[in-house]
Structures are given as C-alpha cells and as structure tokens.
Amino acid sequence: MGAPINKINSWVETTADMIIDVRSPSEFENDHIPGAINMPVLNDDERAEVGTMYKNIGAFHARRYGGAIVAKNISQHILNYLQEKPAEFRPMIYCWRGGQRSNSFARICSDIGWQTYILEGGYKSYRKEVLIELETVVPKINPILISGPTGTGKTRLLHQIAKSGGQILDLEGLANHRGSLLGLKPGEKQPSQRYFESLLLLQIRQLKLEDPIFVEAESSKIGEIQIPKYLFKLMKTAPLIEITMPLENRAKFLMKEYQYLQTHSQALYNLFDAMFYRHGEEKTSNWRELAKNQDWYELALNLIKSHYDPAYKTSSMRKQRDVNHTIMINNGVNDEFKKAAKIVLERYKRELEFTRYE
Image (cartoon, rainbow, N blue to C red; front, top):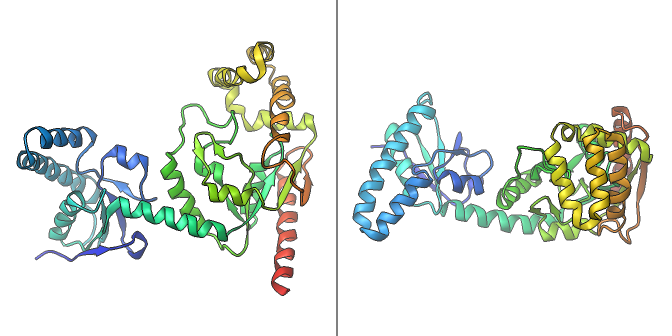
C-alpha cells in the first residue's frame, strides 16, 4: 500500500517540500505557482498528438497511447530530478484541473513511499484564488508614489528604500521592464500578464499592508503588462514624492542606467522607429545620427527634452496632482540615494506614528 495522497483546496495550505507542475511547458510558461518546478507528463507536441487521436480515433486508443507516454515521462522526471529525495520528501502536484495528469504522477510518488498532495481544481482553482485575493487585498495597501521625470533615479531610490528597511512594490522588476520605450533589455522578454499577477500577489503577501508601501509612479502599462485596474486606481490618488535632478546630470545618469543600449544599436533604432509617428522624420533622423556618432550625452539630452519631459508633464500620474514632498538629487551617486531614502522613511514613519496616535 502506498503513502497517502492528500487532496487540498488551496496551494497555501500545504507545507510541501516541492511544488510540481505537470502541465505542458507552454502552459507553465503562461502562468504557474511561483516556485513551482515544471515536470510535464506530456510536452506540447505529445499533448496535441493525444488530443488529435482522441478526436479522430477514440478515447480508448488515445488513453492507451497517452498512458504509455505519461509513464515514460514520469519515470524520466523521477530518475533525473527526484532520485535523491529521501523517504520524508513531500511533493505537491497540480495540473490544469487536478485530474488525470496530476493523479498519474501522484500515484507513482505514493507507490515510492512519498506522502503527496494534489491541488483540487488544479491550476484553474489557483488562478481563481489569485484574482479574488488581488481584488480583495490591493485596496487595503497604503501606497506612496515615487515620481519624477526620466533620468532622476526613481528606481534607484525605490531599491534604496528597500535596502534601508522600507516596504516597496517593485512593479517594473515584476514586469521585467523599465517602464518606458527604453525599458526592455535586448534578448530579454516580459512575463505573461497572468504570471505578472501571480508574482504581484506573492510580493504583496510579504508586505505589512497597514504600513507605507513605496511604489514607482507608472502609466497603466509597463511595456506589454497591464497594471490591474484596482491597483492603478489606488496609485492615482496616492501621496506623491517627486525627485528632481539638474537636466545635464539627468542626461549623464541616463547614459549610465541604460549603458547596454550603447552596445546594442539595433535596440536604439527600434526605439527611434517607435517614436517616428510622434516626432517625425527630422528628429528621429537626428537621433539616429547622434547614435551612429556615439554622441551619447547629446542623444540622452535630446531625448529628455523632446520626448520624456513633455510626456511626463502630461502623464496621468502627474497631471493635477499635489506633490507631498520634493527630493533633490544632484549627481545621482549612491550616497545621495541613501540619504534620500533615510529622509523619506523617517518622514512617513513620523506621519504613520502620528496617525496611529490620533
């Protein structure tokens, strides 16, 4: 008789040693429980082949053929990834609906002697839980927005606040994008919208909702990722901290922050193509010429004046908003951001204590 197979209703109920997602690689890439390991019982091609067989030949033939492939794949996963696991190992397994794929893997784990958990409803129940919890929890957070035009070091300040003990919600980090046309590094890609939301909930779960949470001001989209509407609505009314920096120093800071663009000319040219319909032939040709001549300072200065500053002045996050606090950063060196983070945290700590005392 094998070890127990336990059905659980929520993925947070278990203290499993490993979360195993047995869906196909494309399903896993679209979204999965953060921290899960993909051990597909059918890969994308195999899943399509079995599905076609089910429609054209019949359920019995499809199950017979599919069962052999599933058994082969599970055995390879156990040999390659689980062979050294002790008798006390406890995996949690899920598939699309908590059906055949997860049960097939769980039965073999049980026969080995591993106590196993299966997520009832599979990924579908997990996704539903994410959406409900996000919509319930997000309105409870107390966001403070870090704002400022491009090149003032908003992201640097946000990260320094975290290093100094403050709470942050790093939307650009979760979206793997810097939040502007300069935002995606060459060769990288953004997560899917669904996986972004999974990561967002995971980060929010680690925060104290009653304390200030610092967030960088964003538009409603970060690259291709849409900020959930209930979070964006909250950001639009949150207290605003604005960073300023002298224009010339912003251009120098921009050169350092986006140094990778200096070695990836095609990424820059793609950027200019995206700006063409807004700025026209003359400006974009001038920017191409500056890039070709590697005049990075003049290019950064030009982009700030012609594109980024006008866009910032009309942004929904800045328009008709009162600024609660302004911080001047001069050269963008680390010590300045450390000092600014300390000032910000002390200010909002005093305000929070005063509010609680009232």
